[in-house]
Image (tube, rainbow, N blue to C red; front, side, top):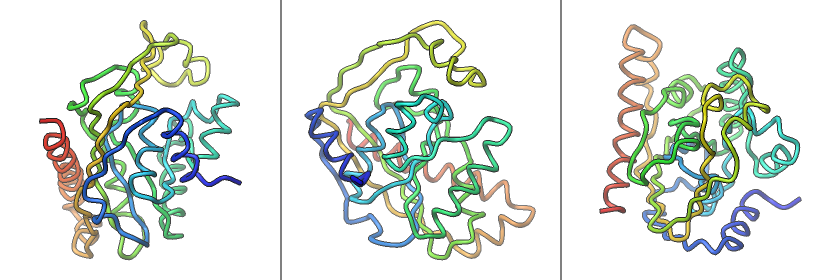
Length: 238
């Protein structure tokens, strides 16, 4: 079977995307890595795999596991669709922890689905959800690195091929799909991928996470990642 990494390279070549990668030397060459990135396009997952030169197991939206053709594609890409809201958190932590324990690379887009359905400027980022920080601090994995990565398109095309409410058929539990308007699809023509400095989890952070300072540790770690990606975006797009 064709690997997710090869599919990613072929996809970018087919679309004619010109990719420029910065600070590739910062990518850990082995071991468990949690990749955290901004998110505006369906091309982000294959783009990050190509830039890091490693297969990345991405958590993706629940509806992607409900549509037959899409489900086969994301599965071949190594993605794991999130569960329904009532089981989502438990299922996500279980699957992601198993992958990290087997020394794989897990990818998360902490902005969630909103930037995918509401077109934003390439330099803008939504507030990061904190699930990835909880995962990093909770997972029983030694030498775990969080790797912030910025995707900064220089040139792109946008189309809106179908109404948002069409997706509510696949996932009626998602409020974002229950609104008027059309789903934007962003195609990168020229794009920079800037890799941040790895954040290695320390024993001190994990000890604080199990105590009364847990919320502070999670908040600080989330803010650190978002600030790093913001700075990388600013460098690429200014």
